[in-house]
Image 1 (cartoon, rainbow, N blue to C red):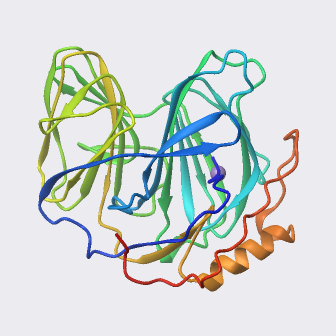
Image 2 (cartoon, helix red, strand yellow):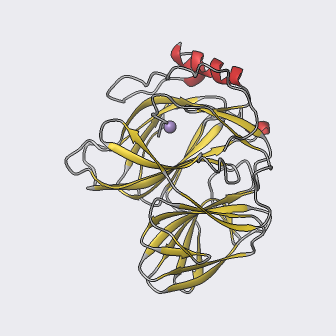
Image 3 (cartoon, helix red, strand yellow):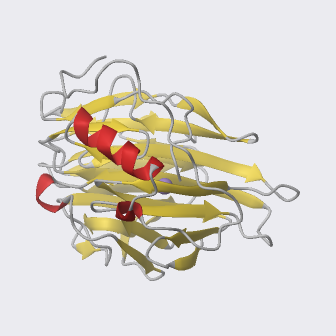
Length: 323
Ligand code: MN
């Protein structure tokens, strides 16, 4: 998905100064963002009070939306740099096309993982014949400096390893590692992303790595994480220093666990770009507007590419996190 903000603001994030070394329970509320005419998403990251969780730097939750009589998701070709996108669905399907020639329908609980490296462009759309409901999360992972210029790539993994936590908990490992199970998706930093299904009556403890920071994104139902009841579309930041996470649910529920080693580098995010300086952002924007080779071309999408928004009037510089 693209950040379709008409006036996106720049976000500077990364660095360890805002990482909680000890366990915390910090409830993050979403900002509602309008995507196109009919779609609203709930943006959890970046958030006023928290910018990253490990290398996870962007989290949108959307749906469930009834799109039976609507086109559904229609995101025209747009560019990315310096990040990976994770497309994760609970209902519906999304057709992904990119400038590498990939054309892939991503279905519920399958991993669509796109590594932009130095530059890629893609489109995402609900197929013409689509399921009635669309429900999912769009996540971005910042690439570390050592790998942010890798060649672009797209991976689709329909089979993902699972962890059965006992007590009604069932986890699917989306990216990185959870309790010894490793996702086949290529990761460039120590990271964890998992889809957790909690059956009615779940009472479980999920093993965590104490040197990772974690958050839980509520997808459906009414799960309780470390005693905090979560409504869908909210996120609970958990900090570092945990060896396990108590999880409960009185009704069938699902959440995503997002975590990783705190991301020590400072990054600049603007629109669909992750960079290290304002100059890099400006260059990426100019190259997209000039249809430079860096971003290639998406074939097959019925419609024009997205134009980049105007840059903000103030120069984009990495600086202290603002709250
Ligand atoms: Mn995108």
